Length: 86
Image (tube, rainbow, N blue to C red):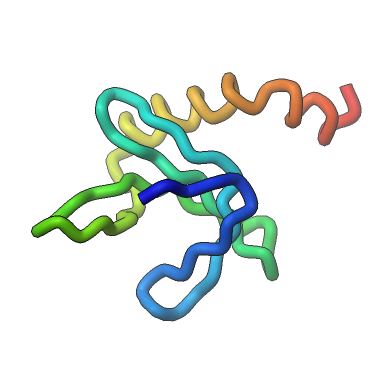
């Protein structure tokens, strides 16, 4: 699936999230999400395809999370600087 910045994504038929970033890294597509009602609630997800169906699953492996989070910071460096006022 093609996730674009600011798209709305519903996970598990329950909560809606806004796409902050979406990118391919190490042959996987990652999607960084934030809850529009609680900006402290963020999810780092990975797209997995099962029987032709695309699913977003939360990244729970600590090392994978750290590698991908670093990539998110690199990709969004200018936005983060503007947000932090630097």
